[in-house]
Image 1 (tube, rainbow, N blue to C red):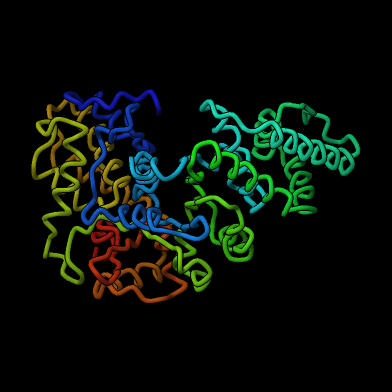
Image 2 (tube, rainbow, N blue to C red):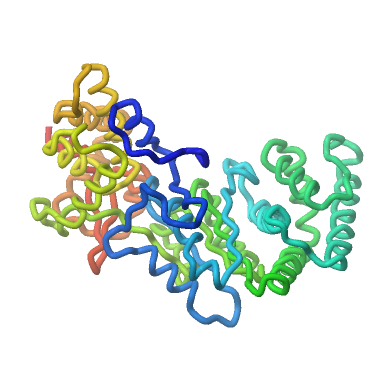
Length: 420
């Protein structure tokens, strides 16, 4: 959505566009904040920014997570555009979706993506790497292709043998993403010499630092999409390897890892992005003025407030649970219904319709045991380790909040389902 123009809506057609569910808010071309961007209560992304700005002996690695739809991608883009970050680092942001198959993701895929994107993005931005390094990289490329040919014995004829290193990385990325057979072969080759790939990454990083006076900062989005099994394989079983690249890295990580005992493997460098708190712990009627104002601003930046009744807006905020994507979803569904009614504004009935649509989805997948557990949690809001709550957190049936201590509550649309 890089060509999206971020115009505040004065009609339902434009409002529908502005509440696109998958719309990470890119900074303006001049580096300024996106017109739709809002600072969360407590500015939690500042904690990650402060950690990146702290002195270090080795480039830091961080593991960044949060609920699905809480705005991780937007916050990473905002962080990358920070003048302080750009003064200290050479930032490179990309989605692992563009480099690998997230359904079948492996630590080797991630390492190759880091090296390839760092090389290609630096060259794309006009950076020149030393001739000696280019020669070494070309030699490494040749060895990789030679080993691939040996392993496959001609079976993977579609892989281009080219002297252009950037084309090699681009082709490798495409094959890793689209061709399972080639993906297996490349992984075999990397397995034979993982340190060789890490040396390539570190050589590119050292050359960028020498030329720019800044070390690269790699921000990898969508690494949180694979499930717990893949997250364990990459960040627990291969943790030491993932810490080896001599660059600063922010890995997005599945929230499932944060709710498992394997969390210990990343505890020291973990950062969790909380949802916007709408009520106090174990006090559903004690509403958070700051939380409601944050989400009112989320809506008012995207559309003229006259397009929605004030009571309906508060109702939508309450149903969102403080999750930005859920808020956008409720607004979009409500706007769609108001358009079909040929109304001039969104009203409470439209918001209730949107909440019912979400509740019906949960009705299909939650069993009696799930509902009993959700009812218990709704009564005390305490976050306690339990294997049964992890899938409910992944489904957003449960949502985590923080005000000092962290706590959880049910998705607000489920209240009627639990007590009907």
